[in-house]
Image 1 (spheres, helix red, strand yellow):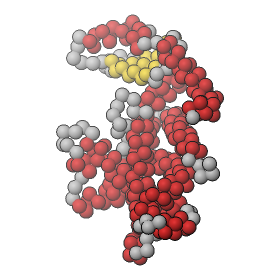
Image 2 (image 1 turned 135 degrees about the horizontal axis):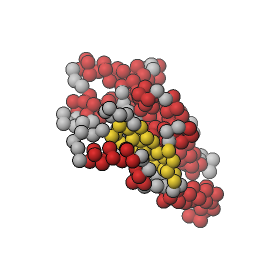
Image 3 (image 1 turned 60 degrees about the vertical axis):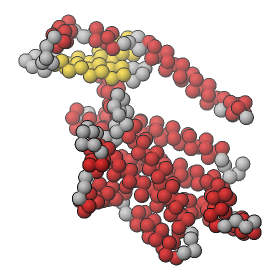
Image 4 (image 1 turned 90 degrees about the vertical axis):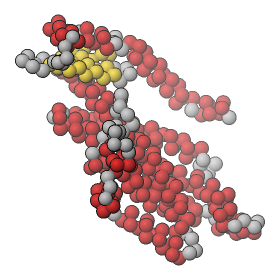
Length: 338
C-alpha cells in the first residue's frame, strides 16, 4: 500500500522534496540579523549604541524573518530623522530604500505581519485558518443533527429544523455576526470579553473570536444540514428496509449503515463549504478581529501603500490551494466510484 502511494504521487513528492531542499539552502544562505545591522551607516550605529545605555530610545528597529529572506527597517526620532532599510537574501544584504528592493522589503514586512509571525493564534493567517477549521467542524456536527431532524417523521421537529435552515440561509452572514456580537450582549447585558480573565491582555480579541465562531458556526450548520440531508437521501431506500429486516432500530441504521456511506458523498460539498467559509472569514474585519483582511487594511491606512493587498491575495490563494489539495486527495481516496 505504501509502495502504491509513493508510485501514485511520485512526481508531487519529488517536486515537494526539491522545493524543500531549495528553501533549506536559501535559509542557510540567508544573512543573519547581526549582518543586516552591520550594514547600517556609522551614524545609525552610534545612535543604536547610545540607546543601549540610555532609557530613552531614539531608534526604532523592525526585523522580519520569513525563513528564506529577511528584512530590517530602522528609523530615528528626535531632531534628526533618519531611515534605513535592508533586505537579506542568498548571502547578501541589499539596501531597500528605493526601487525593486524597497518593494521587496515592503512585501516581506506585510506578509510577516499578516501571517502573525511571532504573535499568538489571534493574529493574521493563523486566526483565519483556526476560525475556518473550527467553524466547519462545528457546522458539520450541527448540520448532521439538523439534517436528521429535518428528515424526521415528527412534524414539529422537522418544521423546527426547516425554520432554522431557512433563517440562517436566508439572512446575510454579516448581519448574523453583528447580531451575535452586538445585539445579544446588548439584550442580555454582558460583554464577550467578560468570558475571559480581566487580566488577559487578549480578552477583547478572544471575546470577538468566540462571537465570530458562534455566528459562523450557526450559519455553516444550516448549509451543512442541506449537504448532509442530500447525502443521506441519496442512499438507496432498500438499505433502510434491509436494516429493518435485520432488526436494527432507526439509530442503529443511521449510525452503522446510512451515515458511513453518506460521508463519502458529503466530502466534495464539505470541501466547497470549507473554501467558502475561508473566504467569508474576511468579514470579521467588521468586529476588528485581526485576520488577514483587517491587518492588510490597517497597514494600508497607516502606511498608505496599496501594495499590501497583493500579499494578502497571495496568502488567501496559498491557503485555499493547500486545503483544496487536501480535500481533493480525501475525495479521491473515499470516492463513491471506487
